[in-house]
Structure formats: structure tokens, C-alpha cells
Length: 423
Ligand code: AMP
Ligand code: GLY
Image 1 (cartoon, rainbow, N blue to C red):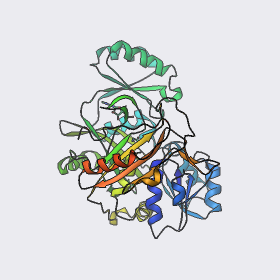
Image 2 (tube, rainbow, N blue to C red):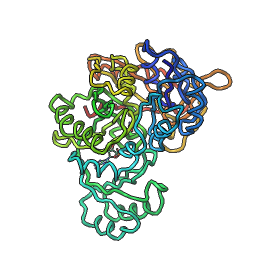
Image 3 (tube, rainbow, N blue to C red):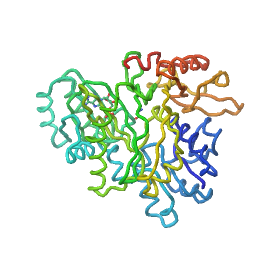
Image 4 (tube, protein in one colour):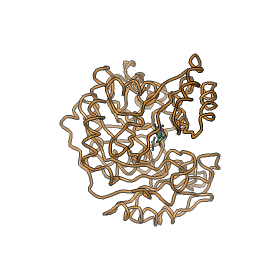
């Protein structure tokens, strides 16, 4: 069967690796892919948000399974586009429809969903321009820190945490005034939760589910979790504090009620649920839902997934996850992300990357890379590469990833030297 994977980051490189290993996968296409995915697949110059172009690619290449990596096409309705098109409606598609993708696409939708199905999460209120005065008065009563979230997708920048009530009021006004465009036309004000975060990944066919390896990512740019948020600077799987007791709580209090909610609301959800959790005094609370896998968690998760990933995708699409087997590699895995100088602020592209071939005993997943006119691999984005390694312990896996990350050079390259510091 021919497969089309939508996306072009490190997450998609890791998925392309696993899909291409499957005997069920005949030809693999990635749109648009990157310099790394081209080792396993044919890259197509197609933007995943351009649905008619995706349709052309599916028809031209006789694709029978589509896996959507990023959230934006899902929130914009790529699954609905497939469902409503007579030539595409029978193509298996991994990813929820637009309504179900609101679990990620709208913070207010996700909070109401959690309230309705009794899923533990931070207390909240929501405000828009009509209720601005109420919002300002409410902020006055809040303990600091105060968490403000633009309702819609804001490229990972829509969450602001402030220690001062006056600053929170200014931020609320700025968000409602269009700081994040339409994404901020509604704002969720949330109680601050203090604890340690982790990421749980679930595949669901809408009824049955399977839990993939658990990971922890490091979102801030700076050592010690300081500075602005990024897409993610590193990940480890399995974070040791997420023990069997914690996972049992997550399954009972979060995963099962989430699936129940999906069914009660009749949501079309065949795909990944990424549950961002925080452990507060050993009790799990949901920070956010995403309707896709995480990046750079996927690099670590795919490394630990020993079962056939393509088969799991087919079982998801065909509502057969109930009989699926997920085998997990017992080894620990750690991923270090190399980024362009200046990221997550402005950065330059086109820097020649050296040393990838010197890497031994680690995998290198590409994100923002491309091959230039001289055939050289050059930087083409903020997050450039991820170095992923196995170890008997996560310390061993980290040491190997760092040893190999040091061999890769490009002008301005940067990575966090303390991934795993809090474990
Ligand atoms: P989100 O996009 O909702 O995942 O938020 C981005 C980051 O902000 C999270 O990974 C947390 O580190 C932080 N955050 C979000 N909500 C809260 C909260 N209620 N309490 C503490 N930190 C939060
Ligand atoms: N690493 C967090 C995310 O993918 O949203």
C-alpha cells in the first residue's frame, strides 16, 4: 500500500523511518518532507494546507493511507475535505476531523470538554471583548502567577504566564486587541499549576485506544527551563517519575473519560491524542490536548515503539485497535535538538551542516534542513536536527546523544546542555 505522510519536521522524519520499515508500506511519500525524509521516502513539493494539491498527490501516487503529522491541516479541516470528496472518502486517514481537532484548536473548547467529562485540569474562566471588564475584575481576584491563553492556534506562542496582576490586565487587553490575531479573540484565564510535566500519547480509532511510550519534553530555550518557549529542545522516554501508579491514574481519570467524551459527542477521531499533563503532588492534571504527536517527543517515542507503526495506523483507520498489540522497547531513549542561532527569535538559514556522517550509534532526525544547489545539507528552519540515542538508563542515552550532537556543526548552532536535569 502506498502511504502519504503530511509534514516536514523531525516528527515526520521519525514517523517516516518507522513507516518505511513496515512490509505493509510499498511506496512512502512525504509532503513536503525534508532532507532526512528523502532517505526513506519521496518528498513531494506539496503544502499540507493546500488540500486540492494534497488530493492531486493522493490520486497521482495511488495513495491508500494518509497520516497527518502537524495540527494545522487538521484544525483547518483536511479530514473533512477527504470525507466530503467522493474520490477521497475511502482513503484511510489518520487524524481527527475539524470539530474533534478543536481539542487542540480551541483552548475554550478543550476546557469545556474537560469540565463536562470530569477530567482533572486547572480551574478557568473565559473572556472576550464583550466581557473585558469582567475579565479585568476577575484578574484582580487571581493569585499569581496568572496563566493567560489565547483560545486559538498561535504557533506555540499563545500562552503567557505573568507574576503581576497589572501585567496580566495589559496582556488580556493586548490579546483581545489582536496581539495573536483571531486566535486571541477569546482568552482563557487559568489557575497556575506547580509540578512536573510529561506527555502521554494515545492512538485511538474513536472507540478503542492504545497508549504509546510516555515522554517528557523541554520547551524553554534556556538552561534550567528559562527563557522563551520553543517547539521543544529535547525529550526523554521514559521519564522515571511517571510510574505505574501515575499511569493507572492517567488512564482512569484522563484517557478513559476522554474517549468517553469523544464517543458521547460523536466526534470523528481516528488518530493521535497527545495529552500534555502535569503531576501536582503526584496527581495528574491536563495542561492541554493536541490532536497530533509531539515534536521532539515523537523522535523518542518512535525509537521505543517496536511494533509495526504502519499496522497500528491501519488498525486505527479500520477501527481494529481493540486487537492491536503495542510492543515497547525497554531501553531508555533521549533526544537533543540542535537549533539555529537566535531561535526562537529571528535566525538565519542556509548554514552548511557538517559532521552528520560522523555520528555513531545515534540516529539523526532532520527538521529544518534542505539540500542546496551544491548538494550540501544546509539549515532551513529554527529547529534543525534531533539526535536520538538508546541507553540502559536515560543518563546513558543522554550522554550518547550529547557526544554525537557535539560532532555536528553549523554556524550559530545551539542546543540545551541540560536535557533531563530535573529527572
Ligand atoms: P499549552 O500550550 O497549554 O501547553 O501551554 C504551554 C506551556 O505553558 C505548558 O507546557 C506549561 O509549561 C505552561 N502552562 C500552561 N498552562 C499552565 C498552567 N495552568 N499552570 C502552569 N503552567 C502552565
Ligand atoms: N513538544 C511539544 C509539542 O509538540 O507541542
